[in-house]
Length: 146
Image 1: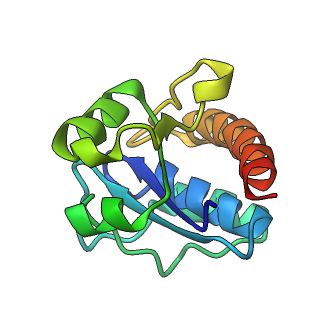
Image 2: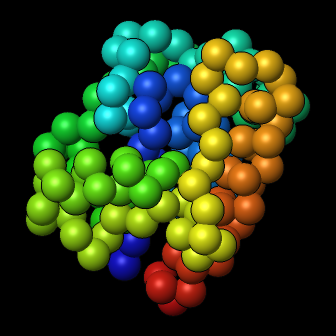
């Protein structure tokens, strides 16, 4: 049973907050939260991420960046990273997590591009990849939970 999902990116201000918001919308009975491997702790979500999520009718304006920690990884039944490197980071630093850490794009064979400090086009490309990964994982989680 998957009831808690941790979504991980690097700074925790762009990709993981967007992915967490989209997953939460699709899976309202699942606890979804996010963190970063090199989080810009205390910062809010990037303005372009907030703008794109507003278009999706989601509000991430109160998001505050946090580090990936032992407690956060322990709490999660599933950890979804944006890249292979982030997956390796989580599994290396928290070996007990092996077998429940995957890339958001794992099933489709891609890393989610990092739009940080790039323009709206990069954010939209990243969001498209996130949406595909979220749709795929939503179906997987529903299947595993039934």
